[in-house]
Image (cartoon, rainbow, N blue to C red; front, side, top):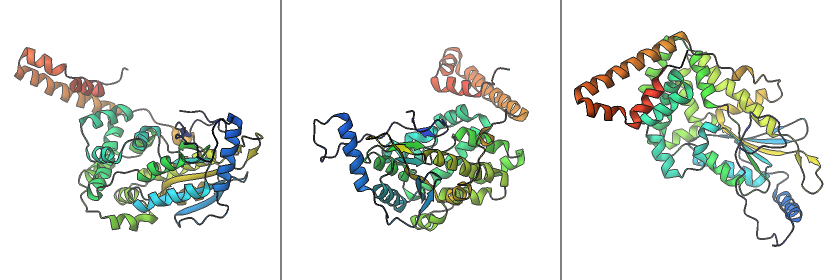
Length: 363
């Protein structure tokens, strides 16, 4: 991750800046300083002072005069991709911030067909990875939420995150534009969400997610432009769990607001090193826009929403029981298969990985 001299706050994730192609109007052979000055002037000429932007864009101003153009999107919407491209081309931002964290950044560089296949396929490897990253209960919750996304993907034939990939691509065409990851790390969100639920609530939520089967059309997606489809689907299922809504939606509103405010700091002009107000484009789900607007001028406590409670006694016991069940099944398989075949089974990478995943942590 690249360090940004304009920000000392490490909570705003960063990617290496998208590769920029030098415009043909820049003559070859110029010194670095001269090239930087010409690119700065070129961006200034392209930037529209009073742009006509889509109705999904909200304009917010920082105390130092920096401006945020917040694009509210639906995660499975072609028109949202167009809104993102239109906004970035019109305002030529210094920074683009997207509703992603480092655990989901792979979707920016994968091609659409691979993403579509990956989004539909929930296999043992994904289960193991989710449990390793988030712990047993939080990892299983992540898999259930992935199932919701996979259901929408299969219904629509569209891979998620198209608006974020569009933002990444368009940012690469803007001179000096930085690209930031603005969402709270997903393991923190899931661990806090699980900790907020009782055992009975966890069971009810898992049951609802496992049996999600309602049909979804592309028309439904566009109707959800006032509230992102994935978040609306989840909101309908977790509406009776206020604590879960608090951790998955409200707390992330706060975190995203914090990330966006960090991005809207003055930037340094290359020709005279003077600080000038920044222009920022934020790309978030439509459901987060009202919360970001409410929190924009408030004092925010980020440390509070980053704390994760230690594993509960029940979680440790459940993990130990599950580990014992799996080990017993493997032992029985070895007994039935015979010594040499059993040892071969235990040596398989997938079996070893599963055993490592389920092994209780040292006391």
